[in-house]
Length: 388
Image (cartoon, rainbow, N blue to C red):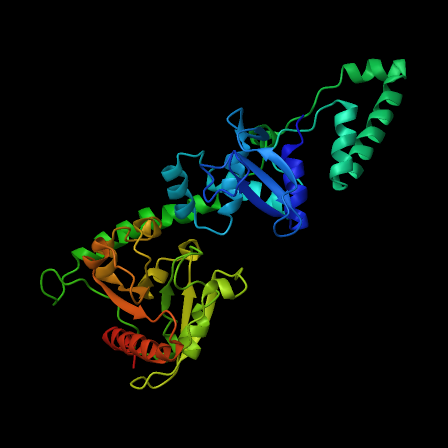
């Protein structure tokens, strides 16, 4: 078996620099015009080279994926799924799905020791020895397999035991027979069903109730008058790493009125943070739940508590929302589109019922003014919902 990906994994784990080269050996500014990739241990050091069109051990639907697609995947390791897909389509490169891309990146970076999409090592002893020399982590595995093979051979040398084992049949119970080749957690289907089925039924029943509001006005849930029973309001933000606000920098902005670029902060592994804010016209400080994943909305009441939604302008963000179109969503929830000064606001976003909020790219002293404007808007929304 070719050891192309094992070599790549070794260089990436060692932190070696990847350089894309044209056919004449000069640096390529784009992976499409590049012919080879080199691995250097220092800037300007072009060491070992590999052709980008060389097939690798990574297989999708029985076909080997070329090294060019693997390098494209690694280049976009910190990009959102939407940005990666758009770039692959624009450059007409093989698109690796989200789960397969995650599996591959975890293996290449050394976070996992194996990948279910990388074909197993050849049975050729010389190839196995070469692999073990290149990646020491494979050596222990090879020794265990060799020892296991010797023990199995010794067992089969007993003729009586060999004859007995030939009549052995595996026992299957009801659960085992229904299992596939790997365990899959289908719990998310239950939550999706609740969001799309139960919530739609609840919304239709609610819309049939008579009310005093005029036609075209959407009812918003009002908080209970008893402060002790009041639930924490929720703010939804995008889960994409390219978003203006992520779980890494949202708390610092909302509590400290200071914007920090997400790439300057360590990535957050949490899907929820809490922010406590005292507002002028409310009697007590309000605790807000900031989430970027609606799958934790296990109860219908959570959607009634959504006070604001931050959007990047991509409709795929709303796929798992109770209201999955911008028109319906921003009638029920206050929408915000944060962008930097000088950036063009997409035309379709201008047609949405969202508050466009501008951040300065470099003048951080203006962040206080932006944060004050945001909290003033949220305060009005809370008062409209019955918070006191």
